[in-house]
Length: 250
Image 1 (spheres, rainbow, N blue to C red):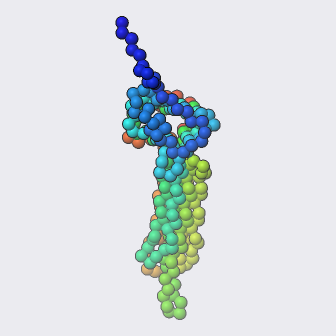
Image 2: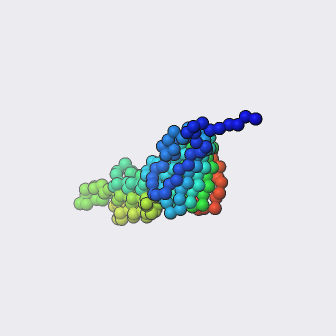
Image 3: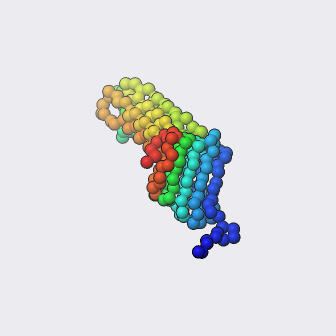
């Protein structure tokens, strides 16, 4: 009977452990040449450890090109970035508007770009909250003084709040500036979303009673919720799910 032996220097599996806080963890970089080797991969995230993310990146990227299988054992905290705040509209103009800016989308906790991964979670995995939309400008109005017609700009809208995420709590939107008979009040900024929740839309600016009518600015859209686990081009298997999830993970 023939027997098979691993060659000199060959490994049966590759295992990595995260034991201190880090951000933007790219698994192809972490595992190096083992990522494309035909051996099982294991990633352990210890209890008490946080893996976070900066804007534009997931906290953990299961990179494309994985060969064989990957098991992630998470006992720590994985948190996507929070969405950015939607900008204020600025002051109103005679043509109507302007509108508030859209809030930024929350980031994903884990983004999966290779098949073959199983994710066991006994800790916490969270997507970031979306940023709140900015408030729209109030309607621009007219005021007549001594027979002279003056245009009074609508008041600017409020700024949206930031979404909850790594090292960031959800923020409330600010109020738009108050108007009067000749200047519409700016719309309020929307609130940022909690972990794994969308941000709120900004408010539409207020109207004035003057003539001719002009349109106030519309509030910006709240940012989308980040997912706890995102399909970044591939599916995965949820193993142990006794931990906490904020945001979608299927």
